[in-house]
Image (tube, rainbow, N blue to C red; front, side):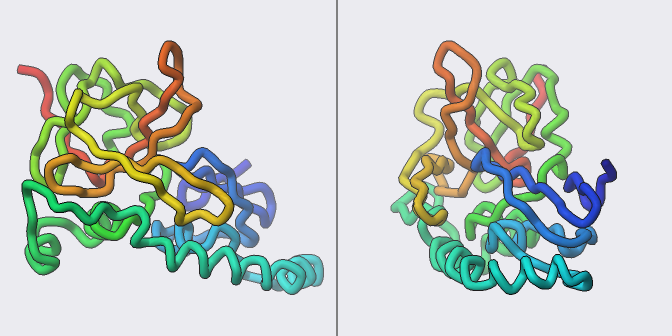
Length: 215
């Protein structure tokens, strides 16, 4: 197995593990540019480098299904961005000044960062993880664990720190989205594959967080 753009590759097939806990087959070699947050999130199945007859046949057979899934994901962006009202509000221009392009896409548009791309995935010092949008303390370090998914994962949030809502951006699936209670910035999803006793995994985007080490 080789790794290209942090996505495991077997020959010409790549398997992308997304924050919703599901695996998506991606056909053709991925360059770092192709394995970006927008394309992986926007279309669970996409196709490139269709040079061999087998790949071309697979592409033709699955194009219709991919179009349906892609349309669902594109129109579902608004479903993963909380509307508020919130205690902290900013204009789009103010958010874009405050955040990097990647952070804006994740926090304000509901995009998904690439697995293993955040330094916070490996951050296990004592401290607190804050919202990058408004600095609200969200998760204590003692609730963080290594889920093996490539995204910072926690068993629970600081009480009263986050809000949740239904996310219907994936066809035939309803997930639980979580966001900052104070500014509404998208953080990630809460899944039911975590460790006991609660069995929950708060699967978060490192781009949505800042870490403050304990004094």
